[in-house]
Image 1 (cartoon, rainbow, N blue to C red):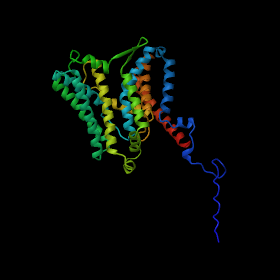
Image 2: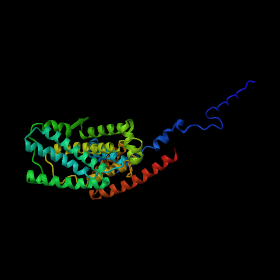
Image 3: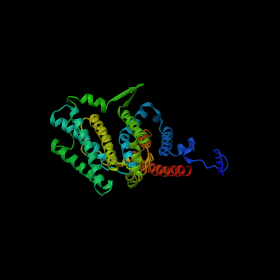
Image 4: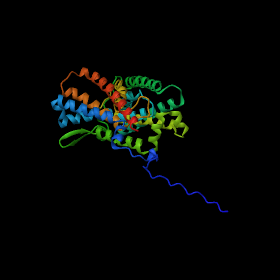
Length: 358
């Protein structure tokens, strides 16, 4: 007796009644993708701020004024971008502001005291500044205190060292001039030169800023390191459980902040020739504000480099827009606080909408 196997049931075609389509095969609409972008709120805010000052200040729309706005945004954005990556990774760096000054002081004093080519001081500054970033990262990954405490300690140490070493070596609170030293002109061309386009002068920091945005965005969205950054910020234990090198990722992020501080420090030095040892205190909060306005969460695991750049652009528009509108600049911090609160609320709403449309 021959057993007859039952005929296999025909599988229903996709989309037919009773068929459940795999959610991974569903294509998200452009609107859903847009709503899921962390920088959406900051872009809306930037457009609103631009329109506001275009109406309130007659000179705001002039090409020279826009170049000034971009310059102000770039000097902040060079630091805001790596700070944003660090925040996406779930950490803070309260030493970022004074690290910029430390970088400039090291370049200036080493070159002056050693009577070396200015580029020697620049390279020594790069090595020392990156070492400060490694120190922050290693201290964080090898000890229990949170990054807030670790980098607060670094902030205090650098603040004291900036003042102490400058007075010890120079006898004053500022460095000696290095404008007549070999290599100064070429270094200024790299870090503090002006490019004229269409009769309008643009600072080279704008190019540094755009370059950092491109590199940071590529790292976040196109590399395995970007996945590690989001994973570490979303949950350190879970990331470690799936093989993410948590310690190396965090040390690398702190080195990224240090690299941004080095660029900003060299710009500070070669723009003004001398450096005041007390500069930079408080700027770390501005960097964090720009990143938060750009969509980064305080808790980590969410944000983008583009959003931080837009946050820096908003800062530049407000800081210069108040001047162009001939308002009292004493109100600047008030407007900055209002923007921070509104951006935080808008980003929260955008994130909730994105989650609801998934």
